[in-house]
Amino acid sequence: MGALGEQEVLIRRFNPSDESHCITDEMNPALTRLRSGALVFDSDDAGEVGCSAFQVSRLNAATIPCSEVTDEIRTALAMASAFEVREVEHQEEHPFEAVEDYWPPAGAGQGPRIDVAHVLVQEVISFGTSATRKARSKLAQKFIAVPEDLDLAAL
Amino acid sequence: MTAITGDTLIGRSHVESRWDFAQAFGNALPATLLFTGFREGTSNALLTSSVRVLVYRRGRYVSKQEHLERSLNRLVEIIAASNPVGRNVVMETYQAVEAMVFDNSPTPKIAYVGGGALEIEWLVGGRSLTISCSPEEGIEAWATDANGDLLFEGEPLPIERFLSSTWKNQGLKLLKSMSRELRNQSFDVPLVSILAD
Image (cartoon, rainbow over all chains, first blue to last red; front, side, top):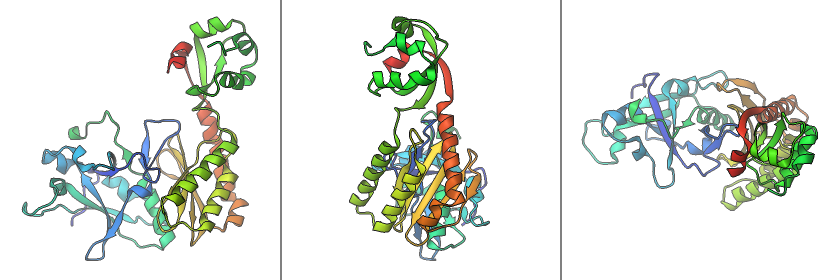
């Protein structure tokens, strides 16, 4: 799984009415960003811990609308660059990496077509439970809700 | 509209008049308004003129008591949603809110963040203050500026020590600064358009 280029934009779906998923700036209602409840980290078979996201440039290249990433509950999208993911700092470490996880790798197989742009935000450094939670909160803060007037297809 | 006592309102110092105005509308305005530029006038002039309006605070005035009631309701919601939060974490979160909010302070947003932990967060003008309440490590506060850079980061403390800590004081100082920022937004708009919102 290769690392994403720093300028690659990642999107993550979230539920805009769930207070554990997002918070809106009290002075600037146009600014909403994620909270850690919107990020779900799972372990894969190899024991790697990661959170799913989608790479905008890959979706655009496949002419898949970014809106296809949303589902019935998580109806909104938030975005961060691979650089912003990597620059999260916790206990003087950079615990997150954004890597390719495109599926299917050879164009065959089944699954949602958005998986051709699937990427993982991996946790590359392990902390204790509480410190991990805090690191994920810091990561969530990097994901800003996509403004209504931003055309992701033009990125 | 008849509730406006404009003659009285604009004849007084704006600092005193802001609450009168909000109360005249039963706190139903989209913002609590602060007027400048009028020393004399009538309620009619107030309604039809383009006046300088300082938005004291978006949303209506919220007292400390109301912040506490809302936070309590939010905690009840979180528990009712079957999140596995222990009694101690809930109590400590409430104590932390109680220590941080004040009349018309920014609004605390409480969320369950997994592992039996709760987080209180304030976000104003891009700056944020987060207080984490976890079953393992107690209370921890950190803050970031509008660029996402850390302003401060405290170590985890038991609630009793947090309440007298420098981190609590730094958090409170930041909230007061956020509150001032909310108050100091200003722009010129026709009053009638605000009332029509």
